[in-house]
Image 1 (tube, helix red, strand yellow):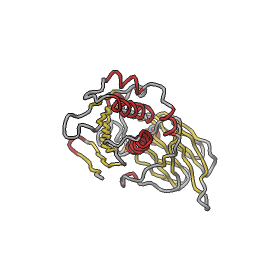
Image 2: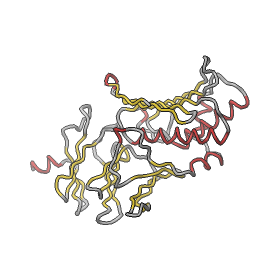
Image 3: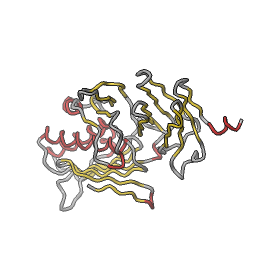
Length: 283
């Protein structure tokens, strides 16, 4: 396993092999998108077993910020390298968003195509069609398996108060009771970039660069989604601080953020999100 930060290009890189699937992920920063690619690799290993496919599969995920305004779109290339590893599948995903089922669709396509004929290059247009197509029964069977949040990246370690698993195109957050039983608190049918846990009760999920979900299980299990005005176009980690028992402070924790001097505030009891707390205080 390799997990390094490449400062010259502001990329974090993660590499690990899962069965016959080698994963390489290059992102702008640590976040749940990295765990998502690990989930894809683990599902790909299950898909290989299902098809009794033993050749290597190399999955390379590279975050493409130019695609951030089209989350439903995808651009990717794939080729079978003509080398000593000629029987290995190489799939390159250059996207802002990596769709789990879409990726599994293309992996399944390459596996089954290799059984029929050895292509050196998979047609990009065909891959794009396959990526966005309705999944097969086998892909649906594979994603019917619960895949718990990976613990492979130390930089992504979290408080155990909340955890999640992926199953059937849904991320399910849960807590554990004293007997170790799961208590579901939230189903997410869309993506997330990161999440933080405060005071073992408050869950804050960054859904998109401009959207936050806040859930306080101490009060109730309902949640609110707040839009961040004038947000960065790409994912920027947030630094969260429980400034008082009743307020959460948010700051953009990256020197390249256009909002690095900005502070936001969430009033827990009132459920009010203040976009520019510093300006409010000055006024």
